[in-house]
Amino acid sequence: MEPLSGGCACGQVRYECTEKPLVQFICHCRDCQYASGSAFSASVFVPRDRVTYLSGKLHHYDVMAESGRELRRQFCSACGSPISAHWPASPVVEMLTVASLDDQGIFNPTHELWVSRAESWHPFHPDTVKLQEGPDEELVREPLRAYFAARKN
Ligand SMILES: [Zn+2]
Ligand SMILES: [Zn+2]
Image 1: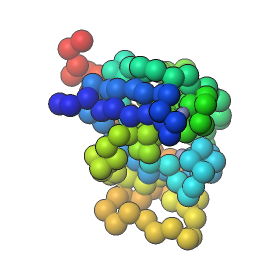
Image 2: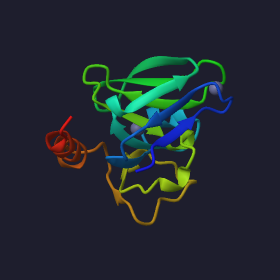
Image 3: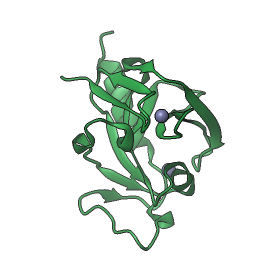
Protein backbone atom coordinates (compact mmCIF):
# COMPACT_ATOMS: atom_id res chain seq x y z
CA MET A 1 0.00 0.00 0.00
CA GLU A 2 0.97 3.64 -0.33
CA PRO A 3 2.26 5.02 2.93
CA LEU A 4 0.00 7.43 4.76
CA SER A 5 1.51 10.86 5.04
CA GLY A 6 0.61 14.04 6.78
CA GLY A 7 1.67 17.04 8.78
CA CYS A 8 0.69 20.36 10.25
CA ALA A 9 -0.65 23.65 8.94
CA CYS A 10 2.71 25.45 8.84
CA GLY A 11 4.46 22.53 7.14
CA GLN A 12 7.23 22.01 9.72
CA VAL A 13 5.87 18.72 11.10
CA ARG A 14 5.75 15.92 8.56
CA TYR A 15 5.20 12.20 9.14
CA GLU A 16 4.61 9.03 7.25
CA CYS A 17 3.09 5.71 8.21
CA THR A 18 3.62 2.44 6.38
CA GLU A 19 0.56 0.61 7.73
CA LYS A 20 -3.09 1.18 6.98
CA PRO A 21 -5.43 2.30 9.77
CA LEU A 22 -6.49 -0.45 12.18
CA VAL A 23 -9.39 1.40 13.77
CA GLN A 24 -11.19 4.60 12.75
CA PHE A 25 -13.30 6.69 15.11
CA ILE A 26 -15.13 9.90 15.77
CA CYS A 27 -15.08 10.86 19.46
CA HIS A 28 -17.34 13.45 21.06
CA CYS A 29 -15.79 13.43 24.56
CA ARG A 30 -15.04 16.76 26.21
CA ASP A 31 -11.33 16.21 25.98
CA CYS A 32 -11.49 15.59 22.23
CA GLN A 33 -13.52 18.77 21.88
CA TYR A 34 -10.79 20.76 23.59
CA ALA A 35 -8.07 19.05 21.58
CA SER A 36 -9.76 19.56 18.21
CA GLY A 37 -11.21 22.99 18.90
CA SER A 38 -14.50 21.71 17.52
CA ALA A 39 -17.41 19.38 18.31
CA PHE A 40 -15.45 16.12 18.07
CA SER A 41 -12.18 14.57 17.04
CA ALA A 42 -11.68 12.24 14.07
CA SER A 43 -8.72 9.89 14.22
CA VAL A 44 -7.20 6.74 12.82
CA PHE A 45 -5.30 4.20 14.93
CA VAL A 46 -2.08 2.88 13.42
CA PRO A 47 0.80 0.81 14.85
CA ARG A 48 3.10 3.31 16.52
CA ASP A 49 6.28 1.66 15.25
CA ARG A 50 5.10 2.15 11.67
CA VAL A 51 4.98 5.93 12.09
CA THR A 52 8.05 8.04 11.34
CA TYR A 53 8.19 11.72 12.17
CA LEU A 54 10.29 13.22 9.42
CA SER A 55 10.60 16.85 10.40
CA GLY A 56 9.42 19.57 12.75
CA LYS A 57 9.08 19.58 16.51
CA LEU A 58 6.16 18.12 18.41
CA HIS A 59 5.12 19.43 21.80
CA HIS A 60 2.76 17.42 23.94
CA TYR A 61 0.52 17.54 26.93
CA ASP A 62 -0.80 14.64 28.97
CA VAL A 63 -4.43 14.44 29.99
CA MET A 64 -6.42 11.97 32.02
CA ALA A 65 -8.84 10.66 29.40
CA GLU A 66 -12.47 9.81 30.15
CA SER A 67 -11.33 6.19 30.14
CA GLY A 68 -9.16 6.87 33.20
CA ARG A 69 -5.98 6.27 31.19
CA GLU A 70 -3.42 9.01 30.68
CA LEU A 71 -3.32 10.14 27.07
CA ARG A 72 -0.48 12.12 25.47
CA ARG A 73 -1.63 14.58 22.81
CA GLN A 74 0.98 15.87 20.40
CA PHE A 75 0.87 19.05 18.37
CA CYS A 76 3.18 21.17 16.22
CA SER A 77 5.33 23.41 18.42
CA ALA A 78 5.16 26.19 15.84
CA CYS A 79 1.53 26.32 14.65
CA GLY A 80 -0.29 24.19 17.24
CA SER A 81 -1.97 21.82 14.78
CA PRO A 82 -3.06 18.62 16.59
CA ILE A 83 -1.14 15.75 15.02
CA SER A 84 -1.38 12.60 17.09
CA ALA A 85 -1.88 10.95 20.48
CA HIS A 86 -0.95 7.78 22.32
CA TRP A 87 -1.12 6.16 25.75
CA PRO A 88 2.37 6.54 27.31
CA ALA A 89 1.80 3.52 29.57
CA SER A 90 1.20 1.31 26.55
CA PRO A 91 2.58 3.08 23.47
CA VAL A 92 1.82 0.50 20.79
CA VAL A 93 -0.66 2.53 18.80
CA GLU A 94 -0.55 6.09 17.55
CA MET A 95 -3.78 7.94 16.86
CA LEU A 96 -3.32 10.27 13.92
CA THR A 97 -5.74 13.15 13.54
CA VAL A 98 -7.66 12.99 10.30
CA ALA A 99 -7.08 16.73 9.82
CA SER A 100 -3.32 16.08 9.68
CA LEU A 101 -3.57 13.48 6.90
CA ASP A 102 -2.61 14.60 3.41
CA ASP A 103 -5.49 12.51 2.07
CA GLN A 104 -8.40 12.98 4.45
CA GLY A 105 -10.60 11.13 1.97
CA ILE A 106 -9.34 7.78 3.28
CA PHE A 107 -11.24 8.32 6.56
CA ASN A 108 -14.02 5.79 6.92
CA PRO A 109 -15.19 5.82 10.55
CA THR A 110 -16.97 2.77 11.92
CA HIS A 111 -17.94 4.09 15.35
CA GLU A 112 -18.78 7.26 17.21
CA LEU A 113 -17.82 7.41 20.87
CA TRP A 114 -19.25 9.41 23.76
CA VAL A 115 -22.36 10.44 21.84
CA SER A 116 -23.80 11.24 25.29
CA ARG A 117 -21.46 14.27 25.23
CA ALA A 118 -22.15 15.28 21.64
CA GLU A 119 -23.08 18.85 20.79
CA SER A 120 -26.64 19.32 19.56
CA TRP A 121 -25.60 21.63 16.73
CA HIS A 122 -23.74 19.04 14.69
CA PRO A 123 -25.39 15.97 13.11
CA PHE A 124 -23.99 12.45 13.46
CA HIS A 125 -22.42 10.47 10.66
CA PRO A 126 -25.19 8.36 9.07
CA ASP A 127 -23.29 5.05 8.96
CA THR A 128 -21.45 4.71 12.26
CA VAL A 129 -22.29 2.60 15.29
CA LYS A 130 -23.08 5.04 18.11
CA LEU A 131 -21.78 4.40 21.61
CA GLN A 132 -23.02 6.42 24.59
CA GLU A 133 -19.61 6.27 26.23
CA GLY A 134 -16.11 5.05 25.45
CA PRO A 135 -15.15 2.01 23.40
CA ASP A 136 -15.59 -1.45 24.81
CA GLU A 137 -13.00 -4.16 24.81
CA GLU A 138 -14.13 -5.83 21.62
CA LEU A 139 -14.24 -2.64 19.63
CA VAL A 140 -10.71 -1.36 20.09
CA ARG A 141 -8.59 -3.97 21.79
CA GLU A 142 -9.71 -6.91 19.70
CA PRO A 143 -8.74 -5.50 16.27
CA LEU A 144 -5.43 -4.33 17.71
CA ARG A 145 -4.78 -7.68 19.41
CA ALA A 146 -5.60 -9.52 16.18
CA TYR A 147 -3.31 -7.28 14.17
CA PHE A 148 -0.31 -7.65 16.48
CA ALA A 149 -0.88 -11.41 16.83
CA ALA A 150 -0.85 -11.83 13.04
CA ARG A 151 2.16 -9.59 12.47
CA LYS A 152 5.42 -11.22 11.49
CA ASN A 153 7.87 -8.45 12.34
ZN1 LIG B 1 3.16 23.52 12.24
ZN1 LIG C 1 -12.49 11.55 22.95
